Image 1 (tube, rainbow, N blue to C red):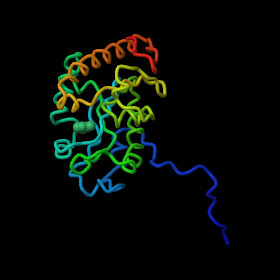
Image 2 (cartoon, protein in one colour; image 1 turned 180 degrees about the vertical axis):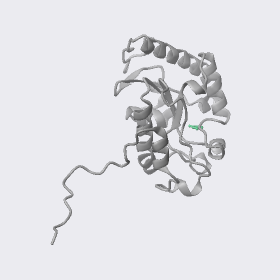
Image 3 (cartoon, protein in one colour; image 1 turned 135 degrees about the vertical axis):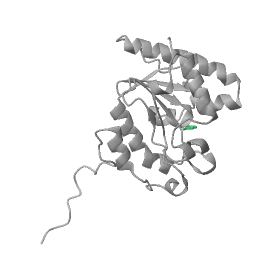
Image 4 (cartoon, rainbow, N blue to C red; image 1 turned 135 degrees about the horizontal axis):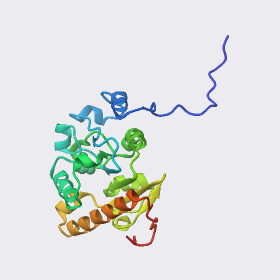
Amino acid sequence: MTGPADTSGPAAPAIKAADSLVALREHIGDCHRCALGDTRTTLVFGVGDPKARLMFIGEAPGRNEDLKGEPFVGAAGHLLDELLAEIGMTRGDVYIANILKCRPPANRDPQPGETQTCTPFLEEQVRLIDPAVIATLGNHATRFILKTDRPIGALRGRLFHRGGRCVVPIYHPAAALYDRSKAEVLSDDFRRLRTVLDRVASGQMPDESGDQPALF
Ligand code: URA
């Protein structure tokens, strides 16, 4: 007779480590790990260069993204494309993903349980893409990546290091659609992002600014 299973070892990983983004997408499958699987139209995995040096992380798909299956294709996405163009880039040069892969009903905020269920896949995307720089768009992405409760308004304009990568918090482009004063701040922050990327490309890791205003 065998005894009870030994449960003293390390907990099983939440997801199987994938060896490519394609394998990860297959592993996620027709996801119903949380209730958003019942209300979404299309799971929005992510888009862009699988070897991008710069990765953007937004909040969650909205209506347009849910229909098209691609992140940032609505009004906020058009602004993101414009901001990228201002620094000489296109969405094909970067990778774009979200905290959640499925649209929350009526675009409500992600709930903690949804974030907990979905973000292991995002973390796996970050591991596979291995970007040198992560730009977090808005409160949800910034709080998740920096493990902080502080609001984006207190963190934008600063530079952080996490796991050997630079993290640059930026206002969510949607914020500038509602408050035009944020548009200029966003343009400034994209220029800073370009500076960070150029420094990293030349082999210099910019210093973390932490609580000091970024000196770049
Ligand atoms: N807002 C987000 O945070 N992500 C999208 O994909 C679209 C809008």
